[in-house]
Image (cartoon, one colour):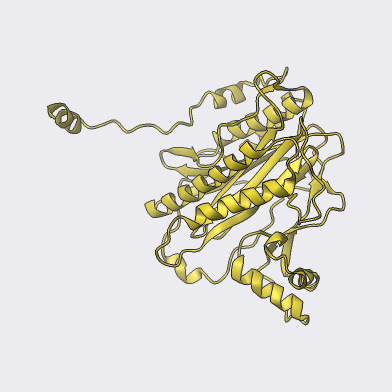
Length: 383
């Protein structure tokens, strides 16, 4: 679903290295990722029957903002939301982040809930997505097609991240996606891209496509060390063809390639407010609840000043699951920086028996501990 443009106005800063060869950059990425994980965990713990999507979106956004506000308070480092919290239920594929008085979602037991959000520190991103099921417990695990699609998405994500390292190509990841989801009689949702991310750039040019079709293809590339990726895996029990169903689009992003001298005062005010608060990253209209400001988006969209993230759905009755991770491709191995170990308790009667997938899943993603040198060990023994 991602189609973004690189930020302008920071080229003078590019003399400083902002890839993973810089330890300070790694620290900021991990800080953003930790805040995103905390916000995600907070939302997961709040998911319950009777909760509304709006309540959970506000909780995720507020938790992420508070976390970002608590770090790097010396100097003028930009920080905050990199993607507004979206709560997409059952056959909704993504981008559901409603305005007050427009929320139509009240959770009930058995609902499959996808939580998606992002945080940045100094433009360095932590993006995360997770699927949970309302009311699922060890005594009442998720079963049937809901279990199939959740296990398929989680397995596909886990296998894919183990391929995302030097020596492997993006096309290999797409092939593994298909092997996994086919085993669960599911499909990758078409049009979903996993992007390389950079400072203030949520959609680098290197991308992994979820599913190749005659109409949708991407260039092949090989993974390199010191790059960062957002792995976004969205799987459906249906055909994987997402479409709009008429919900108001509330998530937008500034298209910095386009400019226009706006005529309406409301449009100019709205445009100025967005440039002040969200010059590069996606935002929700909940950040601009003044009616005149929101009216201004109409003229802005007429002149293509923003990209939109429409609410997308699979066929009603199908179920969609998502897992999204931020991955740091370091020389010593790829690290999963976002994602929490709170996978729903699922009981699927299907499994992926492909040998390549089995071998990938057997690879540990744990960070290897450095062995102490003999000198340090001897000194410690003396003490």
